[in-house]
Image 1: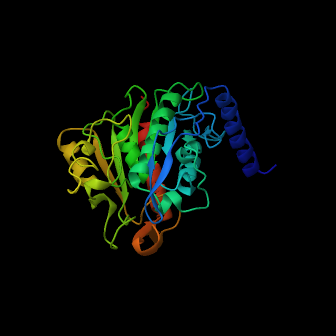
Image 2: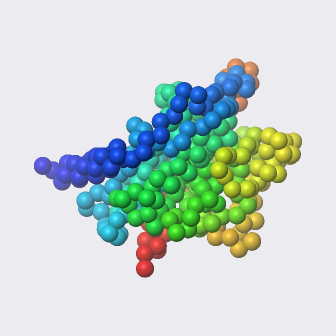
Image 3: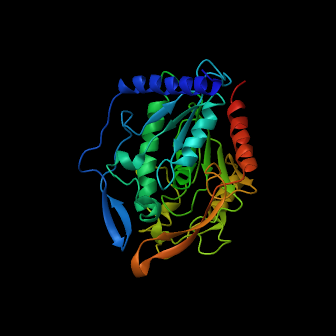
Length: 338
C-alpha cells in the first residue's frame, strides 16, 4: 500500500473512532417547530422562532483526530472548534481541519443550518439570501453548545480548546470570546468578521485574534470597501441568545436603528485601548477566507428582482499567505504548552 493510502486510512479510522464515541453522547435533535424563514424582500430572508441546540449525533458533526504521522502535542490533542461561514461548512473549513489534523490538532466541524432543519445545499439561500444576524444567531447557539460538549469530550484535551470562525462564523467566534471559560479555551481566531449581525461584545475573556486578508472586500459596495473598516446601519443588527452584553444594546433593530455601528477595526481598537487581550493579524495576497483556495475576484448578488444588490466578493489567498496563516495558528496553539 502506498504511503498516502496509509495516511488516508489512518485519518479515516480517527474519524470513525470519534463517530463511535459521539454515538454514545446525549442526542438533541431539533423539533419541527424550530427556525422559520420569513421573506423580508424578494429573495432575501430573516430567520425567526426558536433555534436548535447543538446535536452531537447530527450527521453533519465531524470530529477528526490528528493523523498518525502528526506531531504529538500532549497526551490528548488540543481541539480547534470551527464555526462555519455564511454558506455553511465548505472548502475553507475542511481545509483548516485537514491542516490542523496534520499538525497534531483535533478539529470539530458541524452545520448549524442543517441542525435547524434547513435543506439548503445547492442553493444560494444562506450565502446571499438571508440576513447576517439570522445566520449568526443560528451559528452562535450551536457553537456555544458545541463548546460545552467538546470541553468534556474524552478524546481531546478539554483544557486546550481553540475556536476559529470565518465570516459570519468570525462574528460568532469573537462573541464566543466573551462567554467561554479561560480554563478551557486558550484563544479565539475570528477571521473576516463583518460588523453587521449579532454585534460585538463589550468585554472578552480570552485572547482574541482578529484576522483579515488585506484584499477582503466581501459584501462591499466598492472594490476598496474593506471588511475590517466597514460600518453598517444599526437596523441590520439583532442580539443573539446567550451572548454577552455588547454593541447591539446600543445599535440594533430596536436600539438607534437609524444610526451606524462600529467597524471591526474601531471596536477592536477600543478593546485594545482598554487593555483587553485582542490583536489584529493582516495578510498580504489574501482576501476573504484565507484557506478557501486561490484568489477569486468575483461578485455576489444578494436577493432577486428589482431589489437585488450586486456586491464585491473576493475570496481566497496565495499559497504563501495560507501557509503563513497556518504557521501563525500553530504558534499560538504550541505556546499554550509549558
